[in-house]
Length: 90
Image: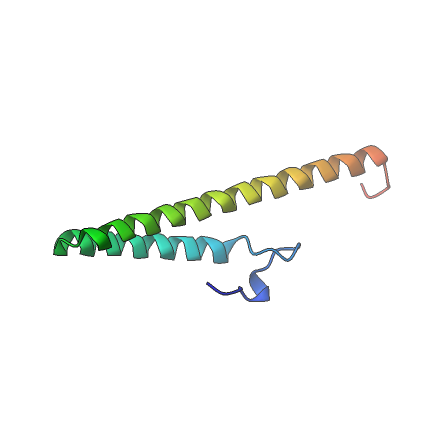
């Protein structure tokens, strides 16, 4: 997939969020459809491709969740450091 429009970018220029979740869900549904068609038609290759597509979508979703957790932790640490500095922003 290509680069997402800027309106989906986060503060750091990344592309986490709704667009990624949508893409992952779309990929997973596509994989499920491909798997089902493979099962119905007896096409084992297509069925396997569908399972692989679903696995890729799950992996991307997991990666996005990890990125979100890292960003949250980074923001928490940054806030704690700023609080310790007492820089007058509170």
